[in-house]
Image (tube, rainbow, N blue to C red):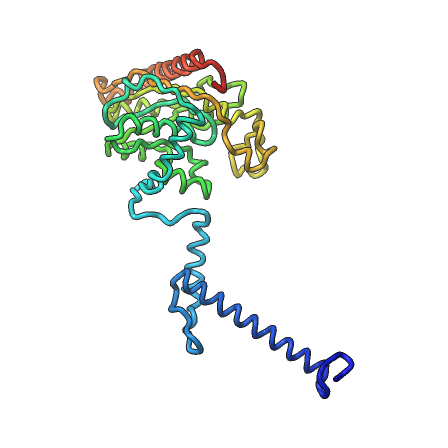
Length: 333
């Protein structure tokens, strides 16, 4: 035996080379196992067999990996996705969660259901409550419960939110649609209930001290759309959503990747947990429908009439919000 315990006639260099060969063999075996696992998972080639295994073409493998990584965190789409991206399977899986939020978490108190038309098309016009579209989800869920025989209602989502990489696919699968006139006309033409929020970003960006004070409704786009399509308007007032994420103040980041970053009692202090909404008490009040069909499409060219009807609609929704605030005992109950 040598001094280091190796057999006589064996040098340290030879032992080192043998160790390296053993390690390389183990690495090769591990890589071969990884290659077989990738082949099995992605179906890019036949499973390797013994010494005559067939390797995976690099371009096929990387194309599949790139496709899977682009949808990281999301399940594969079903075959029931409509032209706006809504996925019936995703909606069906989400209904128990939406029902839990509606019944137990936010304990939604709904009044005025008798004002809702039996079927669409119809524009549901509500106050905007917070950056995240919980209000749109709860309105569509409430209407779907009441009018289950109709197509699932859709809710409009602001442009900037629909461009976020992970928000857009999830919202679209649940019925969220980018807010624009063309989408509204197509949805109404297909007979849908469509929830719109004329305050836009101004309403979503309100700080806590300005909660439940409706902002201006832009240039009367909702009234013009109702006049030109002849569909009824149903005003809706929502109370509770603005306190689920109370914005204390807004910070505008350099470069402006977002309109602003909201600072709430829980975000960014608690990190990702701060995104969770608070369990406030919600009140949804549905007002009597407004039918403008008698005025005819030509009335949409009368700017003074548009302005007056827009202000009347805003006042009606503000009255519904005020009624909800008056009836609610407190923020939490």
